[in-house]
Amino acid sequence: MTDECGAPDSSCDEVLREVATYLDGELTDAEAGKVVEHLGDCPPCKDRADLEACVKDLLRSRCADSAPPALIARLEAFIGQQTGA
Ligand SMILES: [Zn+2]
Image (cartoon, rainbow, N blue to C red; front, top):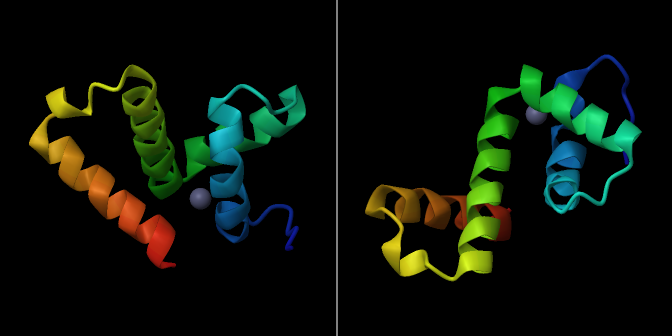
């Protein structure tokens, strides 16, 4: 576990692990604030967070069949990154 304050890049892994919890609304205000702040400064993490939000929406609504092919491709790439790391 790393905790390098002031070095946004170093906390990407930590933020990405917390994104799912953040999207579930289960982080404290302080924790959520750190995630939001990081996402504001880190487009790659913001993109991951957006994709994760899409995945959650799809899983909740179970309307994956109606998702645009481009989105499906991005999600598959996203999932591959998550499981292949
Ligand atoms: Zn990041």
